[in-house]
Length: 147
Image 1 (cartoon, rainbow, N blue to C red):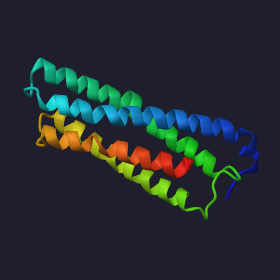
Image 2: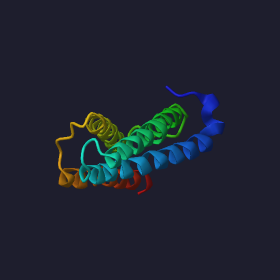
Image 3: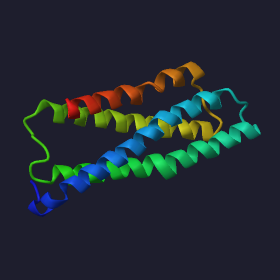
Image 4: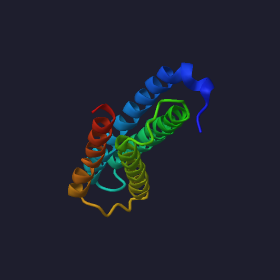
């Protein structure tokens, strides 16, 4: 199902989809790095409390709204005639990578709650490795869309 009235707006939808996705990715790259540094603090210390504020604000004020906007503008593009070739493999690969990114977003949220409650049990090394996940998914998404 597409909505013909969206056709004149396709470039606006695409621009805001890219802007939203860029903001989402910026936060997704930075939050796991904050977790790496947060692991190096003593729970309950002033430094740990500062990381809790930074992580919460990053997630709630940047990452969550950017993800929501990415989905809204992506759905508007899907509903625009000619924006998606449903027979093309790139579309399904992108969708799978976006769903994985959304799952990783959920994991970041869960880990933030652990830090918030001083219950983090994961190591600095774990978060260093986790920090690579959004980069890999970002590369996949951009390559399948552009190439």
